[in-house]
Length: 213
Image 1 (cartoon, rainbow, N blue to C red):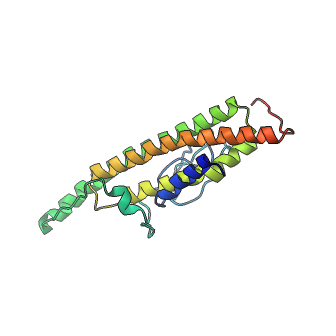
Image 2: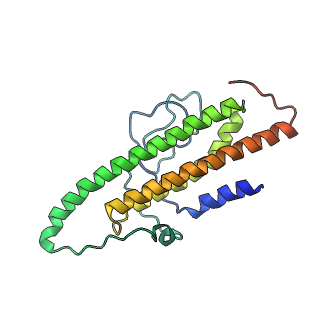
Protein backbone atom coordinates (compact mmCIF):
# COMPACT_ATOMS: atom_id res chain seq x y z
CA UNK A 1 0.00 0.00 0.00
CA UNK A 2 1.48 3.35 -0.95
CA UNK A 3 2.40 6.05 1.54
CA UNK A 4 -0.48 8.34 0.59
CA UNK A 5 -3.02 5.60 1.22
CA UNK A 6 -1.43 4.89 4.57
CA UNK A 7 -1.63 8.55 5.51
CA UNK A 8 -5.34 8.65 4.69
CA UNK A 9 -6.00 5.59 6.80
CA UNK A 10 -4.06 7.08 9.71
CA UNK A 11 -6.00 10.33 9.51
CA UNK A 12 -9.28 8.45 9.54
CA UNK A 13 -8.30 6.30 12.51
CA UNK A 14 -7.12 9.28 14.58
CA UNK A 15 -10.66 10.62 14.72
CA UNK A 16 -13.01 9.32 17.43
CA UNK A 17 -15.97 7.19 16.38
CA UNK A 18 -19.44 8.60 17.23
CA UNK A 19 -23.17 8.45 16.44
CA UNK A 20 -24.63 9.71 13.14
CA UNK A 21 -25.64 13.33 12.72
CA UNK A 22 -28.79 14.47 11.01
CA UNK A 23 -27.38 14.45 7.54
CA UNK A 24 -27.26 13.29 4.00
CA UNK A 25 -26.90 9.62 3.26
CA UNK A 26 -23.13 9.20 3.04
CA UNK A 27 -23.24 6.22 0.71
CA UNK A 28 -25.12 7.73 -2.20
CA UNK A 29 -23.34 10.73 -3.76
CA UNK A 30 -25.92 11.68 -6.38
CA UNK A 31 -28.74 14.22 -6.62
CA UNK A 32 -31.21 15.74 -4.12
CA UNK A 33 -31.97 15.24 -0.40
CA UNK A 34 -34.81 13.07 0.87
CA UNK A 35 -38.02 14.58 2.25
CA UNK A 36 -38.10 12.65 5.52
CA UNK A 37 -35.76 12.29 8.41
CA UNK A 38 -34.77 8.84 9.61
CA UNK A 39 -33.56 7.64 12.99
CA UNK A 40 -29.96 8.41 13.85
CA UNK A 41 -27.75 5.41 13.34
CA UNK A 42 -29.86 3.86 10.59
CA UNK A 43 -27.54 2.96 7.77
CA UNK A 44 -28.56 4.29 4.39
CA UNK A 45 -28.18 2.69 1.02
CA UNK A 46 -25.03 2.66 -1.00
CA UNK A 47 -23.47 5.58 -2.78
CA UNK A 48 -23.97 6.53 -6.40
CA UNK A 49 -26.75 4.09 -7.15
CA UNK A 50 -28.31 5.53 -10.25
CA UNK A 51 -31.73 4.02 -9.64
CA UNK A 52 -32.21 6.11 -6.50
CA UNK A 53 -33.51 9.64 -6.85
CA UNK A 54 -31.91 11.08 -3.71
CA UNK A 55 -28.20 10.86 -3.00
CA UNK A 56 -28.51 11.55 0.68
CA UNK A 57 -31.21 11.07 3.25
CA UNK A 58 -31.55 13.22 6.33
CA UNK A 59 -31.02 10.80 9.15
CA UNK A 60 -32.84 11.87 12.24
CA UNK A 61 -31.34 13.57 15.25
CA UNK A 62 -27.96 14.90 16.17
CA UNK A 63 -28.42 13.99 19.79
CA UNK A 64 -26.97 10.48 19.63
CA UNK A 65 -25.99 8.07 22.37
CA UNK A 66 -22.71 8.67 24.13
CA UNK A 67 -19.87 6.63 22.71
CA UNK A 68 -17.71 4.77 25.23
CA UNK A 69 -14.67 4.81 22.97
CA UNK A 70 -12.94 8.05 23.91
CA UNK A 71 -9.34 7.16 23.08
CA UNK A 72 -8.44 10.39 21.32
CA UNK A 73 -11.06 12.60 22.93
CA UNK A 74 -8.78 14.59 25.22
CA UNK A 75 -6.24 15.14 22.46
CA UNK A 76 -8.83 16.63 20.15
CA UNK A 77 -10.40 19.04 22.64
CA UNK A 78 -7.24 20.02 24.51
CA UNK A 79 -6.91 23.30 22.60
CA UNK A 80 -10.46 24.39 23.38
CA UNK A 81 -11.72 26.02 26.60
CA UNK A 82 -13.92 23.90 28.84
CA UNK A 83 -17.21 25.43 29.94
CA UNK A 84 -17.58 25.12 33.72
CA UNK A 85 -20.42 27.01 35.42
CA UNK A 86 -21.99 26.50 38.84
CA UNK A 87 -25.73 27.11 38.88
CA UNK A 88 -27.89 28.15 41.80
CA UNK A 89 -30.96 25.97 42.12
CA UNK A 90 -33.23 28.91 41.29
CA UNK A 91 -31.43 29.44 38.00
CA UNK A 92 -31.44 25.87 36.77
CA UNK A 93 -34.84 25.77 35.10
CA UNK A 94 -34.39 29.11 33.37
CA UNK A 95 -30.89 28.21 32.26
CA UNK A 96 -32.06 24.85 30.95
CA UNK A 97 -34.66 26.57 28.79
CA UNK A 98 -32.06 28.94 27.41
CA UNK A 99 -29.66 26.07 26.83
CA UNK A 100 -32.30 24.10 24.93
CA UNK A 101 -32.87 27.02 22.57
CA UNK A 102 -29.16 27.64 22.11
CA UNK A 103 -28.49 23.95 21.55
CA UNK A 104 -31.18 23.74 18.89
CA UNK A 105 -29.71 26.72 17.09
CA UNK A 106 -26.24 25.18 17.29
CA UNK A 107 -27.56 21.86 16.04
CA UNK A 108 -29.20 23.52 13.04
CA UNK A 109 -26.04 25.40 12.11
CA UNK A 110 -23.78 22.37 12.39
CA UNK A 111 -26.28 20.15 10.63
CA UNK A 112 -26.50 22.58 7.71
CA UNK A 113 -22.71 22.84 7.51
CA UNK A 114 -22.37 19.05 7.56
CA UNK A 115 -24.93 18.51 4.81
CA UNK A 116 -23.38 21.18 2.62
CA UNK A 117 -19.91 19.72 3.15
CA UNK A 118 -20.92 16.19 2.19
CA UNK A 119 -23.02 17.32 -0.75
CA UNK A 120 -20.13 19.36 -2.10
CA UNK A 121 -17.84 16.36 -1.74
CA UNK A 122 -20.30 14.17 -3.60
CA UNK A 123 -20.65 16.61 -6.47
CA UNK A 124 -16.91 17.14 -6.69
CA UNK A 125 -16.25 13.39 -6.58
CA UNK A 126 -18.66 12.68 -9.42
CA UNK A 127 -17.29 15.53 -11.53
CA UNK A 128 -13.70 14.49 -10.85
CA UNK A 129 -14.17 10.80 -11.60
CA UNK A 130 -16.24 11.54 -14.70
CA UNK A 131 -13.56 13.88 -16.01
CA UNK A 132 -11.07 11.01 -15.81
CA UNK A 133 -13.53 8.55 -17.37
CA UNK A 134 -13.45 6.18 -14.41
CA UNK A 135 -15.68 3.12 -14.30
CA UNK A 136 -18.81 3.85 -12.31
CA UNK A 137 -18.71 0.59 -10.37
CA UNK A 138 -15.05 1.09 -9.49
CA UNK A 139 -15.49 4.69 -8.35
CA UNK A 140 -18.52 3.68 -6.25
CA UNK A 141 -16.46 1.04 -4.49
CA UNK A 142 -13.68 3.51 -3.80
CA UNK A 143 -16.20 5.82 -2.14
CA UNK A 144 -18.02 3.10 -0.22
CA UNK A 145 -14.99 1.21 1.00
CA UNK A 146 -12.77 4.17 1.80
CA UNK A 147 -14.22 7.65 1.97
CA UNK A 148 -17.58 6.61 3.42
CA UNK A 149 -15.83 5.04 6.41
CA UNK A 150 -13.85 8.22 6.97
CA UNK A 151 -17.04 10.30 6.85
CA UNK A 152 -18.64 7.98 9.38
CA UNK A 153 -15.90 8.81 11.87
CA UNK A 154 -16.31 12.55 11.27
CA UNK A 155 -20.08 12.16 11.61
CA UNK A 156 -19.61 10.41 14.92
CA UNK A 157 -17.17 13.01 16.23
CA UNK A 158 -19.60 15.81 15.44
CA UNK A 159 -22.26 14.09 17.51
CA UNK A 160 -19.92 13.52 20.41
CA UNK A 161 -18.72 17.08 20.69
CA UNK A 162 -22.07 18.70 19.97
CA UNK A 163 -23.51 16.77 22.91
CA UNK A 164 -20.61 17.38 25.29
CA UNK A 165 -22.06 19.50 28.08
CA UNK A 166 -18.58 20.19 29.46
CA UNK A 167 -17.93 22.44 26.48
CA UNK A 168 -19.46 25.83 25.81
CA UNK A 169 -21.72 26.14 22.78
CA UNK A 170 -19.11 28.34 21.13
CA UNK A 171 -16.44 25.72 21.68
CA UNK A 172 -18.64 22.95 20.32
CA UNK A 173 -19.24 24.96 17.17
CA UNK A 174 -15.53 25.69 16.81
CA UNK A 175 -14.73 21.99 17.10
CA UNK A 176 -17.34 21.16 14.46
CA UNK A 177 -15.97 23.77 12.08
CA UNK A 178 -12.42 22.49 12.59
CA UNK A 179 -13.45 18.89 11.98
CA UNK A 180 -15.15 19.78 8.72
CA UNK A 181 -12.29 22.01 7.61
CA UNK A 182 -9.81 19.15 7.98
CA UNK A 183 -12.24 16.73 6.38
CA UNK A 184 -12.20 18.96 3.30
CA UNK A 185 -8.41 18.98 3.34
CA UNK A 186 -8.32 15.19 3.62
CA UNK A 187 -10.80 14.92 0.76
CA UNK A 188 -8.19 16.44 -1.54
CA UNK A 189 -5.84 13.61 -0.57
CA UNK A 190 -8.58 11.10 -1.25
CA UNK A 191 -9.13 12.43 -4.78
CA UNK A 192 -5.40 12.14 -5.47
CA UNK A 193 -5.42 8.56 -4.22
CA UNK A 194 -8.40 7.69 -6.41
CA UNK A 195 -6.64 9.12 -9.45
CA UNK A 196 -3.40 7.30 -8.65
CA UNK A 197 -5.13 3.95 -8.19
CA UNK A 198 -7.18 4.41 -11.34
CA UNK A 199 -4.03 5.16 -13.33
CA UNK A 200 -2.44 2.01 -11.93
CA UNK A 201 -5.53 0.02 -12.79
CA UNK A 202 -5.61 1.03 -16.44
CA UNK A 203 -1.83 0.68 -16.73
CA UNK A 204 -1.71 -2.88 -15.46
CA UNK A 205 -5.13 -3.97 -16.74
CA UNK A 206 -5.16 -3.31 -20.50
CA UNK A 207 -8.58 -4.89 -20.79
CA UNK A 208 -10.15 -2.02 -18.84
CA UNK A 209 -12.33 -0.03 -21.20
CA UNK A 210 -12.47 3.70 -20.58
CA UNK A 211 -15.84 5.07 -21.52
CA UNK A 212 -17.13 8.58 -21.18
CA UNK A 213 -20.12 8.98 -18.89
